[in-house]
Amino acid sequence: MNDIWQINQLLEIFINNGYEDKALPYLNKLANSKEFLQSNGQNITQHYLHIGDIEMAKTVAKMMSKAPDNYSQQKSLILVADWYIKNSEISKALEILDFAYQKANKITYVHLGHDSIGASAGSRKEIYLRDIYQQLMKLKQYDKAYKVINSIGSEQDDAKEFLAEQLIDFASQQAGSLSRKQIENILIQAQKLVDENSDYFELRIKLLLADVYVKLGDNNKAIDLIAEALTMANESCCYQDDILLEAGKIFDSNNLKTNPKLKKALHLIIKEELS
Image (cartoon, rainbow, N blue to C red; front, top):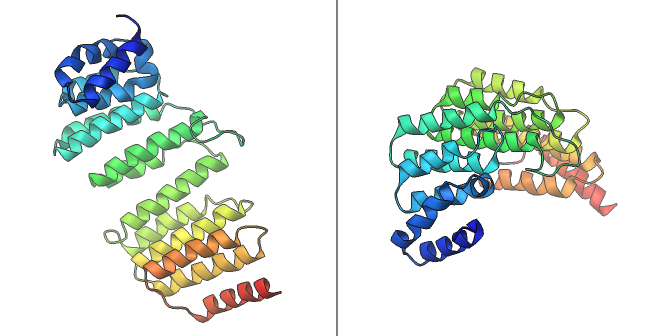
């Protein structure tokens, strides 16, 4: 049998029914098919991990493509890194993550306004860097994680939004470790990336910042940011409901209490609704 798609069907049947020994010859055959690996390599990597062959999973993931931008390969590398992390093989996880990063970092960021997520090289680069960043944060490799998110390499608005969100996430996770001054420097870096012409993103950033200030123990600052976001949302064309919902989640999950600034913002929203 030489048709790779028929081989894959048989492989899936054997794997799903627990016949790993019968599945292995078909798995090995697909692992040697460049055509199949280009688009379905992630499945092959998962199957090797499922049967406990980490070495073959790593080999397939690394050899899958020579191109810097291959979605299936990047996802496969993250699967292998995650396996190493769960099995406390940290140095091997870091080696795989560095391999993934070196490839992702070579991608030229391009994203057009009509492109959907994953359809452009720019949005895929965001996905790859975010995945690597999250694994490095798990490993408490904070300097490396910070370097990864700062490697987006573009002044396009979408790239700047990606970086701003990741910087705020980094600050949020580090709120208990870094000094307040260090955290606020990161937040300032994030705020400088916000395009004043992008109302919705500016509102979202205020809410993300509020969540960080809660973790810093500065509830008053957090509530002020929520009030600012609600006031801006009330003046916008169409973001009020979304921002009000997100603000409510932050408020409720952190047991915050209203202050005069927030009461004023809520009063204006109610007045607008009743008018």
